[in-house]
Image (cartoon, rainbow, N blue to C red; front, side, top):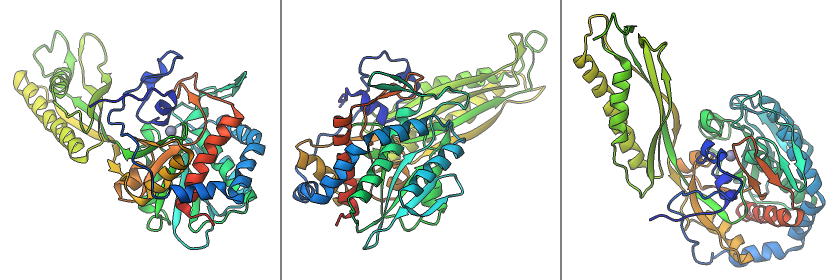
Length: 445
Ligand SMILES: [Zn+2]
């Protein structure tokens, strides 16, 4: 079954799913088919608690601070956007964000081995919730990231994905500090590296597999560009390979009849393209890059394809990956049998270049129901989708984890025309929703 989400904001939210194709979309709202969008669940058992939280004096003070601090939040987003943060080049943006976290009174400030920056807001009763947004953008270091303002719109590559997430973290932190809100859980606020494609979630892998908090984190929320009515509770997994076929090469005429890696690649590509995959759970594959050869009249020494396979089902992802890996040696053997190997044989060099695990946090879990409660209390029930975000890693470990909207309206994510709208009243309501959700799961006093 297919459902359609027609929100451009949702398209932006699933930044790591939607990508350059969206950059070509005209300015009208993007229609993106993510498949399997689940309808809202019935009213959360925590809805009354959420209503009481948002009706309380402290929350109202915090929300008022979101409004008075709105210009500062936008200024923070502009400052951070204008520091380039290409994949593997997040250091300067991380330093600036860490200094901003320090200014808001966090303790245990640190930059970990991967380059994630973080600071702790102590709770009163134990437990550790991570609230993260990613530092990296998809844009190379040479990209002009100066913010341009046109009316109520701000344009710059990376401003939406995910600098608004960093801005929301600062806004929420200032707001709960100003209101003196205490939480039961400690909250670790993180600006993380490596969320976008080539980063392969290395920031999250450091945090959950190696860093000093790895066994202490109880729950995880990442913020990505979107409005406040969507919870990403499913993690689409992906496997990516760069597959290189190598051979002896030679002159196209003089060495005619010699094995040719391009034919082996073509054979493998054709077989890959014939694989049947399920639509539920949605499972897809692609050849995204083709490289190789030296000239039109040379048999190439090497040709390569970079492929992407995705699914929200772990078994289905493994099945398509296994099928791909089985095709490769067959294609090599077929080419070695089809032409002369006198000058050398076709060989395979297959490198995994991406590995994002599948995961899911159940809608029925208390964690998701506490988040859903905020929507129910506001009369705006949450919708549920699967995406490919930082939350994949904790989800795959069975930890309660989701991605929520940072609370701004953004557009044309991952394109040079990327931007955000500035609308104080609307944005304050959205950020307040996210703030209420964080406080629900952190246990606000
Ligand atoms: Zn993102």
